[in-house]
Amino acid sequence: MKFIYADSLDFIDPRYDFATDRNGPGRQLYWDDQYPHEFMATPPYDGILVSRGIVGDHRFTGRYTAGQSMRFRRVGARKFLRFDVGALSEKPIYGDCGAFSYVNEQVPPYSSAEILEFYVDGGFTHGCSVDHVIFDFDREAKGMDGGSDDARRRFEITLENARDFRALSRRYPAFTPLGVVQGWSPDSKALAAQKLESMGYDYLAIGGMVPLNAKSIHICLESIRKKIKPSTRLHLLGFAKAEQISEFTKYGIESFDSTSPLLRAFKDARANYYVLKADGALDYYTAIRIPQATENSRLLRATKEGRYRQEDLTELETAALAAVRDLDKGKGSVDRALETVLAYNKLFMLDPTKDEKQNERALEVTGTHLLRTLKDRPWKNCHCRVCESASVEVLIFRSSNRNKRRGFHNLGVYYDYVRRQLNVEHQATDVEVPSRRRAAKR
Ligand SMILES: [Zn+2]
Image 1 (tube, helix red, strand yellow):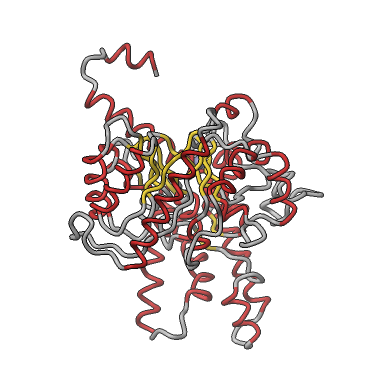
Image 2 (cartoon, rainbow, N blue to C red):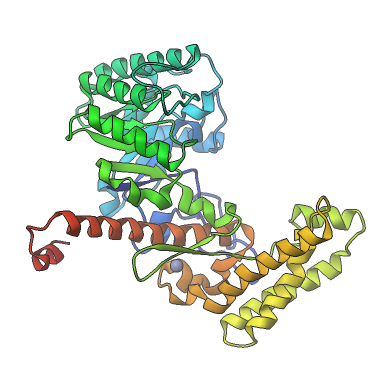
């Protein structure tokens, strides 16, 4: 099972100076920055997925600047991503058409020929057919029952595009096309999968799973698996439940793409820093929030309204940074660090729309999670390049360079987790290979 990282230009400046919160001298965005596979000692994924929606074009603005998008088209995905050095050049690059960027359109804005050209010119090894997202989901609908007119229309469009895409891609034997499955129910998805298989696809990408809960995903995968050959490979598109992937491996998942380990570093309320427990399970720590007083929107508003004075904020911010750095160096106590950080946190955590009790409770919960981070000091036990070079800075929720470094660390831990899960499964099912030989093979 391959973990494919869905990139959206998340890189870091390796020369970033934490003491002054400045980029390396003369740093040029992108050119001096590094992707996770460049910064980490070992690439923390098996391949990369690039969505057309992220690259953007004249119809939709993506994450790329016009210049980046032009360079991407000129030099191809691999060179642009700097995924072309040594062993990296052997790893796959998947493409998808970013169906969420045109979800509100009547029909997808791309023809199969257009998207295929985008993949082939870009040097993608794998690419998905042009799908149209279906919003309805009815877990109980049997066969082709249920589904709104719009859902059925999107279902047909997705299949029609897949038929064209498959036919056109036969001209490029080195390129692997994936047919995208869309449906409004487990059975309609399974039927779509069966139809794609009969078109000649042996690799299917399952779309539309983002809003589904784990139980619905199980039911969908079960019905899809029942209808298709065991040899047909499955890819889970934009799999948001990456932390639960081990539940789903039994459906013969060849690959899945996700960004969630990186995103949780700075988007999750609590689970910001991943660790792998001795039993192979994932565990999470909360990051230490010390935002720049001059950049935090709540603090900025409060100073503008005259509720806080800028110099008081800066004083508390500086004290919080000093306290956690001291703790990292073995000076000062956990209690002092906690107190100092909370004194600053209080200022931007207080929510004027909530009453005093609710605010107090929120601060108390934050304190409990923060205490665990400060007590355990998990960055001390990690030997990845991020933690070794940034030390406690990796746990500080502040500026993109710290937050994304934490994301890189998470990717590394997550990748170890996936590989461990696979080994466990391998050992559970493959009883014939003596354990010693299996170890040597790894
Ligand atoms: Zn680390």
